[in-house]
Length: 460
Ligand SMILES: C[S@@+](CC[C@H](N)C(=O)[O-])C[C@H]1O[C@@H](n2cnc3c(N)ncnc32)[C@H](O)[C@@H]1O
Image (cartoon, rainbow, N blue to C red; front, side):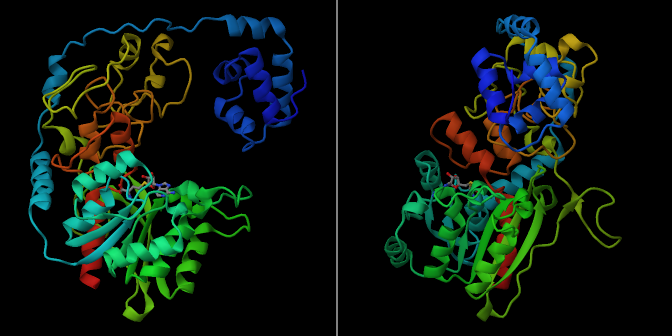
């Protein structure tokens, strides 16, 4: 059997019905390397290629491996007893009371008008909520996903729907949107990162590659005073097909249009959000305003952060976000329909039951309590007294990255994820659980957005 490329390896594997995990196991080549090779993103060395050839040429080993049954065939579900020591550790913190008071006062107090905005790539509205808290009236929004548009509209009933797919909006439609909303001070929003080309992979026919340019078409028409563009940190290392950093291309495009641009790294935990979440923000300020782009100072930190004179409040923790919520084990539901735990099979509960905070079931000494494949960032418990891990759209999957509750043995509920993202309980979510999870996992935490919006409102 000759393996000439990643594609031929994948074809061979799929034809004979051998999973990538099992191939990794019998070749000793890490699964991520096999996966990267199959996707054309990673080169295997000569020794690994030889190993592949020799293992795949061993028909007995291959057929035996394929025929081997999974260790866990049946999915048995049982009620999980509440362990009194765990329930004791699950005590409400003072920080939790203060956090809930803060979120509820931000939602109920009406800030004086700081300016106007439109929101692009609005998602379920995390970024918009922070700007609204700071007094910005969001006049219009644009979002591709109809389920997220519904959530957005419920929470921002006065914002006009300016369209769905930005790539399908003609320049005339953008002008029409402008005449509906009138001029605004700000454009806010972050095109999804697939919208930027990766080195050598740019496909001009892939509409996702134009999303940033579509954002700029709005800038061309609206000419806002300030544009805020959020993205994942990965963007700062991405290069275009011409070999330029995408971040420099973004800056250049804004500069061509008469804006001064700053690029700022932020971790949400440094602004009072009970979650590690690293993002980048471009702040583009129209040159005629005579101001340079800047970013708010950090407000929260760990002991030892900052210099002698800094005065950080301690970072908020998982417990500060969630310790008032009903203690739930796998499959249980509280009165709040958003606080319902996914039911996990008994063998997964067994793997995770004794896993300490901050560790993964893959770290278990007993091999029978380790998941059969994967890495120790998965099946991992969070830490009660530290900021939560980055909330992703997959937070309901126990096998995902750091999705296990610090004390209970289950994945996170929607309410917990919303709290870690700093959505107040009064924020309305509707639609399928999948859409709600997508909206929450993709959102900019409203408290982080609020810090940026307050900073901008001072400048305006
Ligand atoms: C990272 S999320 C935005 C989250 C939002 N800023 C928040 O704080 O809730 C990006 C959004 O862009 C939307 N999107 C992707 N492609 C789009 C397109 N072509 N037109 C409009 N929206 C699009 C996605 O559906 C997704 O909700």
